[in-house]
Image 1: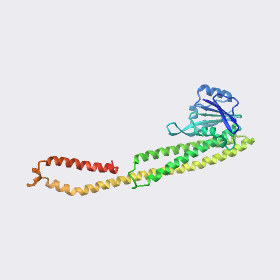
Image 2: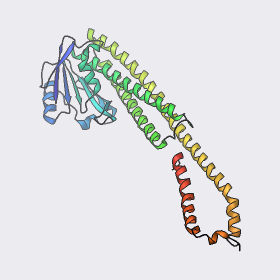
Image 3: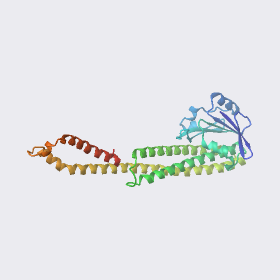
Image 4: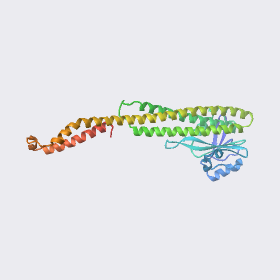
Amino acid sequence: MICSYRPRGEALSCTDTLDPEAPWIDLVQPDAEERARVSELVGLDLPSLADQEEIEHSSRLYLEHGVPVMTALLTVRTDAGAVETAPVTFIPTRDRLVTIRHQPHGAFRAFHDHPDRSSLGVGSALRIQVGLIEAVVDRLADFTEHVGREIDLMTRAAFQFGEGPAKDHEAALRDIGRQDTVVMQIRESLTSLDRLLGFLQPTLGKSGDADEARRAIKSAQRDVRTISEQATFLTSKTALLLEATLGMISIEQNEIGKIFSVVATVFLPPTLIASIFGMNFVVMPILEWRYGYYACLALMVLTAAAPLLWFKRKGWL
């Protein structure tokens, strides 16, 4: 799909056709024909999805005929609510910006809905590019803040040992793994975006817009590094949380083992006496009881079921 954006005052209007005069052309899941049309318009070979997913630095950040072609891995939230990374390519030519992406991205939607939040406005392709970068940084900051709050809640829950109902440690471990994966994806996006911003700055030229854009991009790069430091801190917190949860599991297992040891010790002397003497007495009135056999079977079932129910209630099974 091709979306051509034109500024309308402080807003952006979008058309679903290729507008040669539009300062921003956004390709969303483009097919080969759409990519060829835009490629002919800008005079450059546009990268395919396979090209965007290359991990080499030279495949993500390079100049083609003097035009920077820059790909960053950005975090996106899927329709199922999961967080993953997806490549987004920025190609700023002299008079237009071309973006290529294959997943819906909240930062693009936020920038389209609120372009007035951009520090430089939307008066030119370069200003639109700066606004998009700022929206991406804001989105990454929102992701990081949300994950930080989730990890804080999990930390408080983990250290409430012995308080309230028994905890589902298996679910806790899954949650820790999920949040740690999101943090790693955020860090990957931040690293990718930091490299893109460092590559972009020397290509901006020396016009008035370029000077303003360079200052805004330097500010965005400082924000990226600040968020990256926070993400590193969250990685340390998830590691601590994982160790704490495993420690809690170990402590609970030790407590369970101690109870079993006490029970075995308590019943060991009666078991020893019964194994020595058995039922070898002459006078045993209970042998003449009509319902003794059935009562014995019921007692065996009860003594087997009672510990199982108690262990289940304690969350040991």
